[in-house]
Image (cartoon, rainbow, N blue to C red):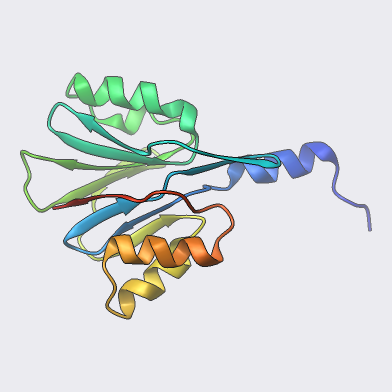
Length: 153
């Protein structure tokens, strides 16, 4: 059996959504850690836009493209290339939407996205809030960490 090549390792890493975003039905939360090869850094992953806030799970480079589309009242479905975009719109109180694989949907039930999603979902199933769930995911997922941004919806 051949060992993976450097190109294979890189492409596998690039496909991983290295963050955790959680929606518990009342709160949207996201961590702040970015991971690149052998280093970690901390950046905001929840941003304001004209009518609400949005988060990105996936390629951080999609952020300016998605922000521009939202600010122009465009659906980010055509603009997010490698990412899942999760957003709240002040024109739709209490609702969370996400765009993934060229589809936009409302997320009705508690849900989580990213590399720590399974941990966050388990925590929310046990009664934790979205921010508590992201904090728990950070304990077990090496790609989740740092400060947690949250907003009550």
